[in-house]
Image 1: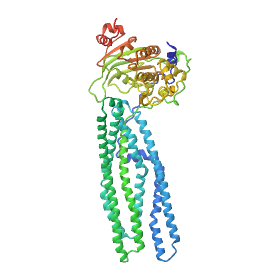
Image 2: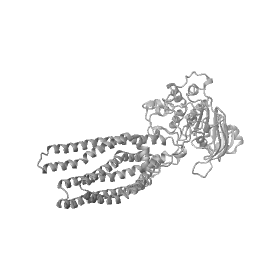
Image 3: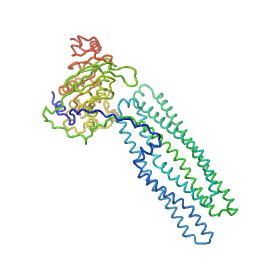
Image 4: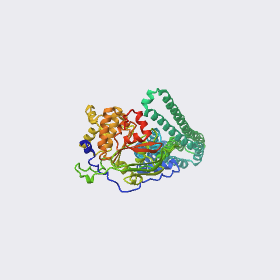
Length: 620
């Protein structure tokens, strides 16, 4: 075994011992909430209720100060009519105005700050939940729509949590207070005014449920627009190479038009509510002016009382307008809460504990062989599986044995089920029947995080994340030592690449690793998996984009690694696996034949045909 491979695999990373049997927790979905408003209040706003109440209280105090202004104005007028000094009344009125403005501003700031906190905690919770969704559930989601829920929908929560709910509460109280004061001034005129306002506002309130439905549809279509853009941007080079810009632009335009139409519908219903509130205020003002003037002329009401009454009408008017606008925002926030709740109802997987702070230091390199984690044996017993939502069966009673240690290859035509075996091993999906055993224990009896920490998995497309080369290599093994990092770089022939990069390991790789070639991305993915010190290493077409020289070097490295761990390779390029200890030929979801390269050439027609197709040396 080479020194690099021994340095890499000689000591298991701490925490990789076989875990005690435990069932993977499967949380039950949260029961559907009765309404979006209840969700908004209990799920999103309850943790911040202290600051919300304080902000609303300040707003109410400012409103009460404003509510006293008409009475102060009445007192000032009465003092002037009586020939007294207006100084004290004028100072009192000015103090009320200043206090109302300052207190209201303080309450508004506290509410807006709290609303930002609501959005932050919701986004953090939702992002953590999305990243813990099972693969099978994620397959049914559209990433663009998930992003819209995380950004646009949570933004609607901000509008509802910031001022809307507080305005609804405080404005309602202030309106009731204003109406009470009007009844104290003149019950007859107040009754007529309330009748006008109540009739018009009651008619307008019938549109509130329509605002909620239209808002939810608007947010849903916004998610569809995000999904359309994500689809095009996720295959940007394909779109360019095939001249699909016009078609994808048209798809995005149609989604944007649907979003516009739904948004306009919601805005239209909100405008109808505001029209009703504005109309009620104007009719009330005309009623007070006409009917109140008559009562003043007949001596049933004083001029100062009429002026105060008009002040109250002018005071209530903006409050009713605010109520109308806030009611629309609450409906939008409730619709957003429902869409967020749909994601929060999905079951999630346990949180992996691969963080640097949670991971204990690795054992010293000189640890005796007795404490080294042994490679895993793999066994599939009559496994049947078909992907959710599809009628076809991918694995049809597949049974195979992979002994601990050494290199085992899975070969066969496309669609035979090779990559599906890896997906089931990682428990991205659950088999319909049969068992998958690691060291004789069903994978369903392993803690999910422990299972995945034990397996190193290199996907077929070898994704590289945005960030530096160092970040990509150490992301899942943050406590790897510099010596281990150098060993894996040499083993995967990345040391030469590091020397050529402008900033070495700290070079930014760009979005999805665009600064690297396909073969370099594959080697980075392999190095990342090896740094985790896996007991079972899964390589899915890990050399498909390598040139002949690097393929040969990596093949030798994999052979060295296979002396200390179990390596299972999926390969269409059979030149990479001709030296495997055993080769399993899959066809139609079953193991057709098992043996060495020479044995299969002599005994299996399908394997021989695959070899001849690739012009390999097929002499037995």
